[in-house]
Image 1 (cartoon, rainbow, N blue to C red):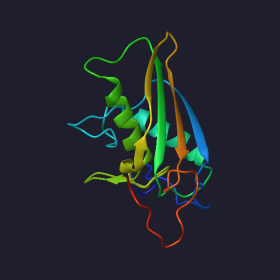
Image 2 (image 1 turned 180 degrees about the vertical axis):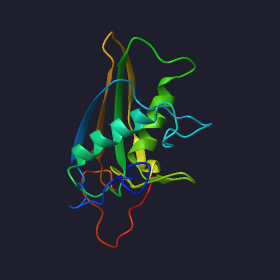
Image 3 (image 1 turned 30 degrees about the vertical axis):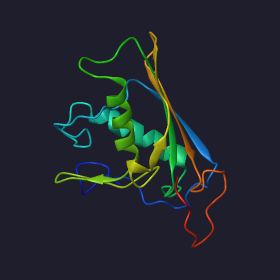
Length: 162
């Protein structure tokens, strides 16, 4: 879709969203994007913007044209690397991943959501670091039901929250 814009905002979905119980697995070579509180990695001028784009492309492929999911998400993340980058911790990478898979906008960019609408949908998950000479990460995303029991909430019915 890049052309008039200096970046790729994403694609318009061509299929319905995943169903509750579906899942996708992403395997990405290299280091994941991290959360940068001072200068967003979404900005094409950020020094690790390419990591953001590599993950978005992997997620687009895994979603196969489906629309973003609108319910709760389980996101499990495993990072394999010799060590963290200076001043980074596992949570910085997990936050960067979550920011990458949703939609966002700023004064310099607008990105369409890929896996979910907003990272606040991620309600459970596990982050693991494995020390390794190989550098890659894997993300397993499970599309959960609103009821917590594997079933979709009834149409028009409110689901009690604990």
